[in-house]
Image (cartoon, rainbow, N blue to C red):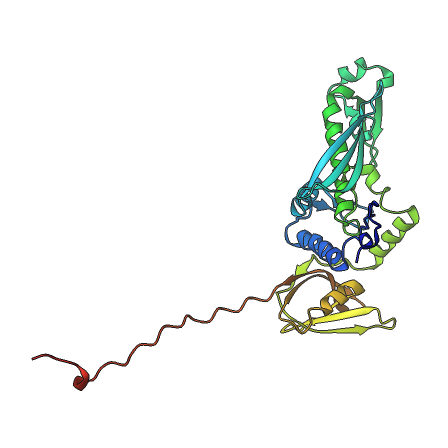
Length: 327
C-alpha cells in the first residue's frame, strides 16, 4: 500500500521511491562481475596501476558497461581557460535509454597545465636555444638522464584536453551508475608514470601496507573459470567462522571466500538444477593452495525437451478373409 491510498481528496499525493530490491542490486553487481570476467580484457578495458589495490576502469571498459546497461550520456562542458592554459570541466550525466530517467553523473577535468601536456622535448638544440628561458627546462628521470624540454602551445592541445575531461567524467559516472567502485578504480592510468607510484586510492600509510603485503604474500595466479556445475556443499570454517568453502558436483577442489554475500547467494542455488561457473584465483599460503572466489555466474537449467509428437493410431491390416471383392 502506498501513501497515495491515504491522500485526502483534492490534495497532492506524495510519491515514495522505495529504490531497487535487494535482488535487483545483487543482479546488477553480478552482471558487472560477469562482464569483467567474460568480455573485458586486461590492458584493453581495464588495467592495474602500480601502487593501487584495484584495477582502473578504462574508456573501452566504461563504454562496454554503458552498452550493457543501456545508459546514455549527456555532456555539460565548462570552459575554465586562462591566459596560460586551456582547461575544461565536463559534467557527464547518465540516463536510461529506455525511460530517459537520470541515473547518475560524474565530473572530469583536464588542463594543458598538467605535466603530460605542459612540456615536450625540444626537437633540436637550436629550438632549445631560441626558446625563452622562462618556457624551457631540463627534466631529470630516476636514472639521472636529462631531457631538454620546452613549453607546449595550449591551443594545439585544446581538443585533446577536452576529450580527456569528457572521458574522465564518463568513467566517474559509470562507476556511480553501475555501483562498480568496489571493483574498478577511477582512470588512474592517466597519471604520469612518475606519479603512479605515489598516488593511489589511499593514504601513504595505506599504500605502504599494500607494498608490505605484496612483499610477503605470494602473487595469485591469473583468474580461472570453472566448468558449469551444480553446487554440492557450502561449509563455514576458520576460527572466526567467517570463511566459506564451496564444492561443486564432480569437482574435487574446494573454492573459498570471505565474502558472506557471495556465499549467501550461492546458497540459494544449492539443491537446484542451476549450474554455477566460479571465477577464482589460486594462492599458495603456508604450504596449502587456496582457490579464492572472485565472482560467479549462474546458468539457468536447460529446458526439458518436448515429448515426441504422437502419431494418430492406425487400423490393423486386413486379413485375406476380410478383404471385400466383387464377382
